[in-house]
Image (cartoon, rainbow, N blue to C red):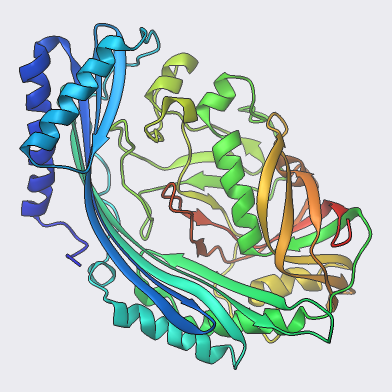
Length: 477
């Protein structure tokens, strides 16, 4: 892989490619077309393992060019990964023809004006240059630490460089790297019972921050402690959610709640100026922070800056791209993701952890670390939830979600884990669970969690202790 920190020549190469596309637009459409171009060079490598053996090692390098034009009151977009002269020519002609045929776009907000980004991203040269042996070392450490349990998962690295330019004179470059590891360990229970899985995952801008032995030991401890679970009846339970579970809350709050389009359309819970959350809750989005995973500008070409969404329980702002900001009568916060239908999404969202050193230590048993253990000790009777998944929106206005637990749930009594609990279905308003008076504790450590490949998302999630979580079903219905 190439170095993560772009050299001047590399940055110029991407800007030159964007400039070629803009020049083609001028040649075909003259001065009456507005155009913006994003050039994205990505190197991605993945090492997968199953049944405790590496079974796949793949790497991919690609360059994509995304073009958006506005001409004659109509807007169209296109993209290509063919970046020779013919490929760029085809992209421009197709996109201009699409703009001629599409209906008028009265909501076009105009191009981003020239502005300087306050950061260039957080690329790490060692991560960008990591080879398969370095990922394999972490897989081996994970497998060895699982102590003979069957394991599966992945270790991945990626390096992205990007350049943005438009016909209004805006020009930006940026880069970032990402490393992620996600694995499970599987333990067998007594005869006739299903196996139990434990999981551990972590992301960082630096591969050096991922310790396979720590993650493998954590996953194995969870799996061994989760065999032969019992069922609990439906009801509202006090819970401690581990960071992996909290990450889903943050993602859904970002996509459906603090999204400028959802707010404009009246389908978001977010009300700026209202105390909608417990006073312990503060949410920030900051792509410029050291170690942040993502570009320092959005896909509209607006530089990103720190955005405070919630302070001490009060909703203070929402994310906007240029289009949603124009509707709301405000300015873009730099959160455009390139799709008008999707709105603006905070992609570097962090729940601010409780004050303290932020240092954590590993603990024996299924709890992730000492920060989780501290919250469990404060729970008289409730549940410890490792992870949630398969979540779906039932009511976007209140952000009522339904989903399942996975990779370990335990009954907590008098601050101690007493029995593993089988898979649970829940139906819960996420902002409702974080409402005033209902957050009983926040961990002092907020790790980065790996996001999905469909969109680069950097979530920093501490553990949470909540007064109530609605369990609506279990393994038997």
